[in-house]
Length: 231
Image (cartoon, rainbow, N blue to C red; front, side, top):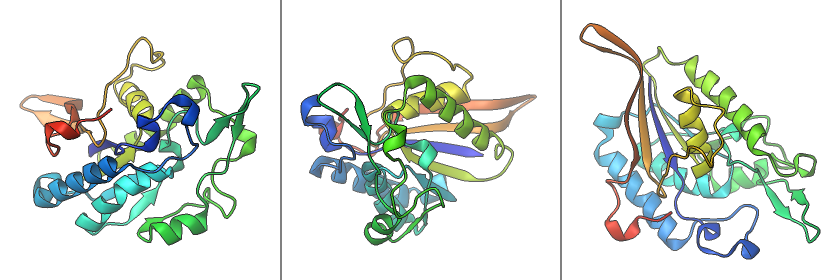
């Protein structure tokens, strides 16, 4: 299996002060440019990448990044709630507590992203919810380990999987795949620009050696001009 992990394009939360944060931001104009440039790069190099499965977080910025890729490669988007960003869908209340919010509903995703295939976990009431509040780092690590386990179950296949996800989750997932979890983010963090790509090959034979995980690259933005490298 070949795994490509993409961070979403620049979102409005990436360029505003924390006090102006919204729970499910959209892409900025720059973020949309980044997503389209990545999609065109993947289309031109479709033979090299050969993506067979495209997955995206149900967060708006990830779906908006995945959609031009799906169009360019003529693929459906499989919505995967477990690859959402650490914290989930929430806003901080005046008293400092975190208030969980629903996120996009099944109907909203179907209307705005017709190529998206939504699982049962995404309902007419959304996919996150008030009862979940703000996810902790430890909870995000546990979720990431489950995603890594799900991917490992497909490691011996010929699939070429692309995940469109988020910066913190991407770092956790690299740690999980490389068996570096649990490591707090302040101790180890994999930097990723908006729409950067990480590529890991599972179960590759190199001469007399069988390599379980080969990291080809992380934070690759070859598809972007330098002025569109954003964090």
